[in-house]
Length: 299
Image (cartoon, rainbow, N blue to C red; front, side):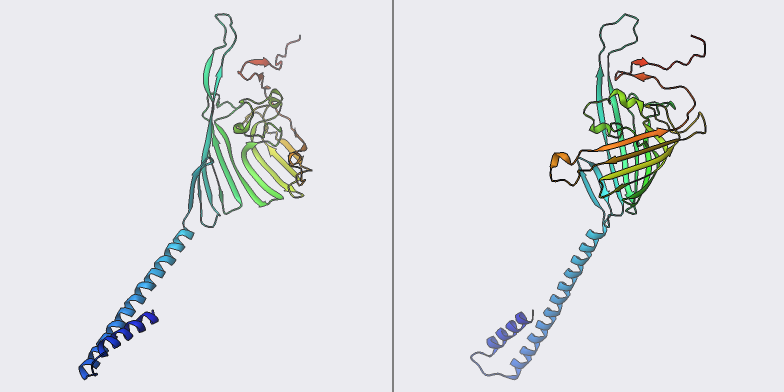
């Protein structure tokens, strides 16, 4: 800016003094031109400073405002410092069931149905506390205490360290490899029959974590206790609680051979004493194929 001002001043002086002697009137004009140039210079500086402030404010606003993204993983809103995250997503699965010919008074009915319709709300608060709420409005949702599926999950997980975390609420007990897979990631719409032998979701608390560079994971929890394959929001049968645990290892996670990284070996189980009737086992079409005997009469 100084160079421009000096160039303009030099041009004015040359234009005003070329070809004629300098007079008092010329000195006055030159002084006035200098004053005008200085005033313009001040205005330019003010405008430049104003623009710098606007740019700085815009930058601070962009840093301080939340980040919003919408894609295949749903809607996500993240604070500028990433300490707070809010996500909305979900999935719907459609099913159809057709049975072989049967007697006119048979109970089997061919039907289409919404197998799962699950809105999911989840997020993070203060960076280390993750929460999740998942509902289910599918056709098989039930309010019975044996398999309460309307409120699928509602829990809070405190990630104090990667090696030690505390989770409490309603979630899947740490038993059953296929059970711990999300319904959205299953190869088929239904899980295999052996999965009905392990508990589904229950209310309780557990500690969990990853050790040895995530090559070893553990989970131990205390829950209300549910029947095999069942879920529950509360315990109405007794005061007993179930202890569930899981230990799983990926010994080759750091290998250079890609297809070996996912190889795992683990063990899990539950221990408890529960009262009440045992749940029957049903097929993928909800047809009962095994029931525990409950009669007290002699055979």
